[in-house]
Length: 400
Image (cartoon, rainbow, N blue to C red; front, top):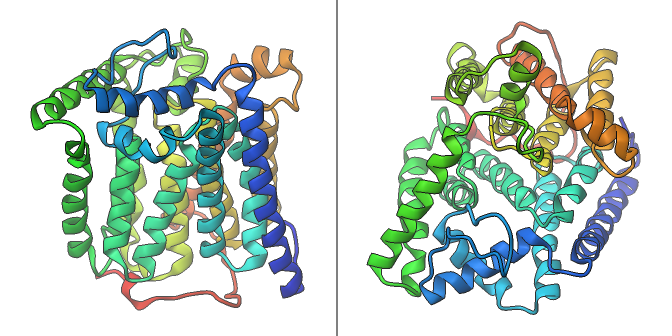
C-alpha cells in the first residue's frame, strides 16, 4: 500500500488526485466524444426532451441513439439541467459530476493517507466508466454518502441519497440495509419512503399524472424484460458476476433469482450473527465494502463499467484493516485482472479473446467478497487498523 507518513504530503496527495480526477473526466469526455455524441449520454440527454415532449421514454429512437433508456422517469427529469447544455459541455459536466462525487466521498470516508490510496485504486475503473458516460461513479458515491450520513447521525440525508441512487439504477436500494442496525433506522426508513415518493413524482412538474403513470408502466415492462433474461454470451457487454461464472464453468442455466437470493442472504447474514460488532467502525466499513461488491457480482445486468462500484468496495475492504501478504496479493490480482486486463492497456486479443470471453473480470471481486464475508462472520481473523487522525466514531451508528 502507498505510505504517506507526512500528513502534509498526504493532503498534497489528495489535492493531486483531485486534479487527476478532473483531468480524467475531461479526457474521458474528449475520448468518448469522437465524431459523434457518446451513445449513453445521448440516451440520457434525449430522455429529458422526450419526457417534456410527452413521448414514451422507453421506445426505440434509432435516429438519436441505439439501445433503450432504462432508468426511471425521475432520472430523465433530473438530468434536465445537464441535457439543456450544449452536448459537448453537458458531457464534460456529467463526467465531472461522477468523478468529483467519488473523490468527495472517499476523502470524507478516510483520513488523507488512506484516501489517496483509495482514490488511486479506484481511478482506472472510474475513468473506464466515464469513457462511456456511465452513471456508476455517481451511484457509488450516493451509496457511500448514505453510509457516511448514517455514521454521522444524519439519517434523512442518507435516505435521500439512497432514493436518488434508486432513481438512477434500482440496485442502490440495497443500500437501505446500511440502516438496519442503526439507532435512527425508523427515521431513515420514514425519510426513505417520503423522499422516494417525492422523487418519483418530480416529473409531474413537466407532464400530467396520467402521462407519468404510463411512463412508469413502460419502465416496468423494460425492467421485467431484463429480469427474465438469463445470463448469456449473446450480449458481450454483460459480465454477469456469479451467475455468469456458474454458466461458464459449471454449465448451469438457472434463472438469475435463486443465485441473487442466495447472495442477498449471505450479504445479510453478518447483520444477524455478528450484530454486536456493528458498533465497531471497521466492521461497518467492511459491510459497506461487501454491499458495494455485492451490487455488482449479483447483478445480472452488470457491465464492465459497473466495476467501479466493486473496485470501490475492494479498496474500502483493504483499507478497513491492517493487511498481510495474502490480502495484498488479492488486491494486486483485482487491480490486474479487473482493471488493467479489461482496459486499453491490455492488447485487444487478450482483453476480448480471453478476459471477456471467460468472464475473468468478475473473479477477483467474487473471491474478495467471499473473504470479506468470512471476516464479517468471524471465520477469518483480521487485524483492526489502529485509529488515525480524523477517525470518527459517532455514537449514533451503534446497534440497538
